[in-house]
Amino acid sequence: MVRISRALRFWLDRYAPRPTFGGWYFPNPQGMRYDPDNFSGDLARFDKANGIVLTCLDYRHTFGSQRR
Image 1 (cartoon, one colour):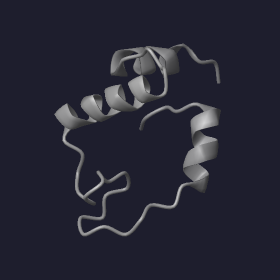
Image 2 (cartoon, rainbow, N blue to C red; image 1 turned 120 degrees about the vertical axis):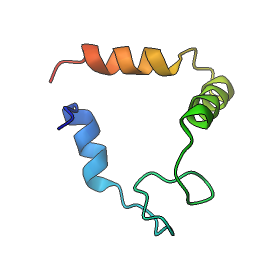
Image 3 (spheres, rainbow, N blue to C red; image 1 turned 90 degrees about the vertical axis):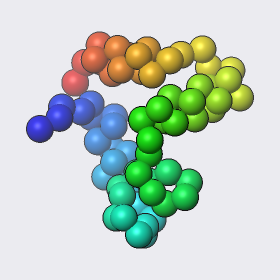
Image 4 (spheres, rainbow, N blue to C red; image 1 turned 180 degrees about the horizontal axis):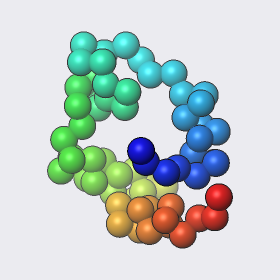
């Protein structure tokens, strides 16, 4: 079991995964499993393009500090 915030639950309930060969719920752009090393790079590029100054660790800590 993984605890999640109400805000995340709101979005997960509305998320409709696209069909993929491997059946991944959050596939990479090629429809396959995300390589953990690639995810942090993708996130860093997204953050930079959107003026966000956070790392994967920041996101994790932010989630952990949210009240339910």
